Image (cartoon, rainbow, N blue to C red):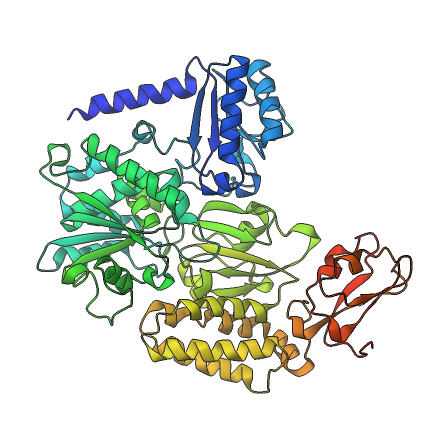
Length: 627
């Protein structure tokens, strides 16, 4: 197949789209955009342009990362930069199209920034704005820029050139390129990718297999999903290169069924890659063949563990098995198998396209390259970001994320999902790399960052994450099955005011036993949220146990609500909204909460007008029980 002709057609199509004679309108239509109304925006765009007689290109794209601004609409007129508009809801679409396309006057108020071309008055260059100026987009460079369902867009942006380069080299040369890049597994443990490949390549027997772990199950994590939805061919290319390097002709993508859009775009990408000769029995007349199959998971968190994942692909119950032997020696159906996650394989494609030196120009001595993170929680700008390893938590949370909303103080950040730990405010200048996070008692994980403000109760946070891990435990090994349950029961007692002296020490003792005795990574890391919150927020545990107070106002049994007489105007709002009729008082009279009837739902606090601020939450139980 003539690859030069393929690339020429793709490049011409790309130039025509962005620099042609027609205006271009795109909408960020990944899952985050769709949940904010992106598909409705697309319909309005089609209707408005049809009614106004505007001949233009209308495209969907993936997530560019600014989740806080969804739905996002992109507009460009010929010869002018592409401008991104925030919160492009149904009321704004017609106005933005009229101003930008018909009047050639980009709207400054809604503009997030511009991409390419000359500078626009009043609109900053997007990649110089606070959200992006500290980011280094390598694996996410296409997300939010190309149409993920048009392979021509991927080809026009160096797509599959890494594969073409790989096919002209020997397996050992490709593995050495990955070694020189310093790439470590982006799924959590950070194991050197080249070593895993080398073990599999050297392992006797065959056939050999490649498995992509796309079973992203951490609460608040969406890095892999966003890459699959925004640039699926990056994964496909990375898988083919990896298969060639380790001597595998069959690859599997294990993706949870809860990702329907990602799965649809993956299937589309696989079909397109086969059509153009990048997948199949004889790829680009090289003599090398590679096929990809998709296996949909049922959403079990434990299937993110590699041996449980392999069991699920084989049609067995998804439970871990002891290691060694490791999958690189004996994996899928007992054959040598490499398991890498989505971001790792996406990095492989980019490294082979641009070279090892390009990739390791970012990062630290031991943690090379960049890492994508989902930045969520109590943060102004919830985002999908990609930053160089070694950046500090302060830079991520305050410079990129914009800090904490509502004038609140930063309290902690949970890294690494439910298996990670909580890092306190005193450690905001901690570098985000594998070694620094491990020293703080947490992990990189797949890249979830959950930010918490001063109102977060760290005991309850630990209870929440341990509850998730305990529910997701497969139950195969005793330390995880019973240990997490015992820890959870102790935490629940503490948050209900039933904690006892010695509970903190017992939590630490059980937690260490669970870490040492569990069979797989789920149990080995499940105690991390508890152990780190005890390590950094021990006084909160002590207050819950000794004083029976939750000073954050979260644990219901350890708080009470009271109406301040001097501030109550008798507006009656709290009484009208109380679900259990526990508030007494006539309109225009001071109201009172009957404490023994109160279920502590907090509705009274929410319904009290801010200007009055008469209903307050206090730690501890009420000293006086109203009749």
